[in-house]
Image (tube, rainbow, N blue to C red; front, side, top):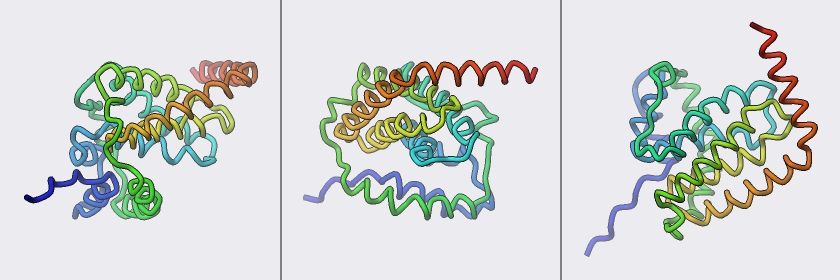
Length: 207
């Protein structure tokens, strides 16, 4: 009896997108390739880079799509819907392939440790609860808090890759880092509140 076919890994699907002959790649192409796994894949792509220190402003650029995606996960949508303006966003295929080349070695190491297990962690109620948590974490990621988005981004990335690969252990790791993130942010809540007020004051002053 032949073994059941294994679902393609996230790294394999990213490489598949990179094999397109087009000169530019759109977000719509990534969504189309990942299908019903688009939630986890795109969340991972947007959250993973923020685990490392990034220049000012990057968290706002990557955090905005995270808010949009996690909100739909929280609401229990089966398929990811993105506005046309976001779907039409594009980057050169050369840049996309370079990004995949840098990300793939790390992603493959993670994927070798992942497998479908503890799948009871993923169910309609659990998915909405994780979606709510990730939505809250993505709001934190979006705010200009120095080094304050690294732990929340790691938690989101763990939930995302776990969801894409149906690995409940990754979800448990996500919960652990989410709790640590909230605890750390609570300790520095006064400084964070001052940063949030300053951010929105500056934002309002621009209009």
